Image (cartoon, helix red, strand yellow):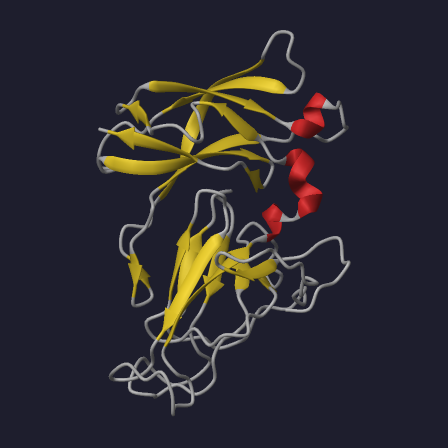
Amino acid sequence: MATSPAPSFRRWRRAGGSRSPTPRRRGSSRQCRRARVMGDMILLPNGVEVAIINGASDGAAGWDLAHTPAYTPVIYRPYHSTGNRFEEQNATGIARMYHSTVVLLRDGCLLVGGSNPHQYYKFSNGQFPTDLSLEAFSPEYLDPSNDLLRPRILHPSPTGAAASVTYGAAMTVKLSVPASARRRRGGLGEMSVTMVAPSFTTHSFSMNQRLLSLEVTKMAAALGRAGTYHVSVTMPATAVLAPPGYYMVFVVNGHVPSEGIWVHIQ
């Protein structure tokens, strides 16, 4: 998409390609009234927003029964006032209809791919050919204007092996907040910690989608390290809340999440 000097944007990029900033498309203050079928809904790691993406504005799944792709993602914010909870984002240029999918990545962006509204594969000679490409969509919290607010997890290591945790146990996360280190006013907001299952998504359903807000039991500044903190949280008590397996853990400053770390709970 065309580049723009706008300071705030929600970005699309081809997976594996360079980031190209595009002006964000602001939604109106009215309730979103666009119809959508075959859409995907993804819980975002800040714990307060939902992305609605892919699908069509008419028809039904498969057999070429839909003719108007829903190119424009929407962010749903339930904490906003009634009538102001949906905001349209920048549109993609690719029809993502039946058999499209979206997953949350550890860096907070959404990996979007696929589309095949036909009975079989049809790569040509159709209104909306089979598409196997991938794109990445960056929600507003990844806007560069939030870089100083974005927490950075220092320990457990974001690039190391998954941290092993047990049910009901305490886990301490060491993190830094750039704005706080620079003593910027408003740099440190309400701190929360979320735990997100890496969902398996197909046919517009995220089969094991799950997001938990972990109890923060203690938060303390690290001695002699400006902008660095230790946050202690309690892991879920039972497998009913979080079945055994791998999860991404994010520290959230206000509504801006860190890059996630992997944990393995059992």
